[in-house]
Amino acid sequence: MVEHPSGFAAIVLVGGKARRFAGCAKSELVVGGKTILQRMLSASETAAARVVVGARPADAVPLPAGVLRVLEDPPGSGPARAARAGLAKVPDDCDRVAILGGDLPFLSPEALRLLHEHVDAAGPDTGAVFCDNAGRRQWLCGLWPTDRIRQNAAEIEPGAPARHLFTGIDVETVTWDDASPPPWFDCDTPEDLDQARTWAADLK
Image (tube, rainbow, N blue to C red; front, side):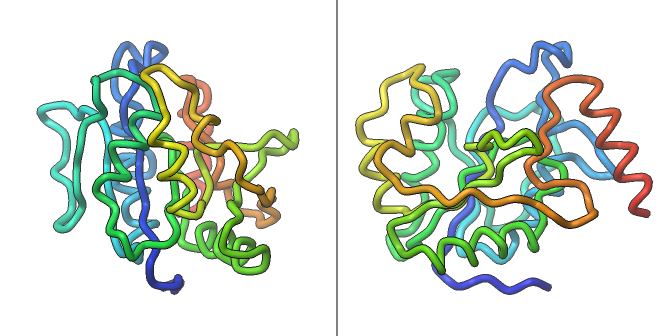
């Protein structure tokens, strides 16, 4: 098991309409025999606190023991407000928080360790996010100083974009150079899901 420093929390945002999947929650899609949410919670199991934010289907697999769940206020008010709701459940002694979209089937302990390494090197007030192969920052696949995120979240209005959470925070950009599927890969479309399932099958 990959070890992380103590005092880190993980917030997984599972809300959203998922219109491209006929309303099926992306976090509940199955990749490699498990739902994406199950895979993400397993990847972040060393976190001192794990918080799932957003509505889940009535027949969803129960969350593991110790994982907290909360809804954003008001419901459907966007990822920034969802992160704000999740932060309310993060203990004060968690000095870092991973804020993660709920559709990342290849998030891994190694990926979280790499984010930790970058923020350790950069300093306590710096965040780190993965970037994709085109160099775009994947804002909902990163690790942040909890106090700074709390300050920004306090000003978040319903519907505000996720990037408002990160205003004024220095950011380290992290690339994934391993041959395994990238942790920033998100299942936005049915084609993405097909690709994820192909990769997962190849890993067996």
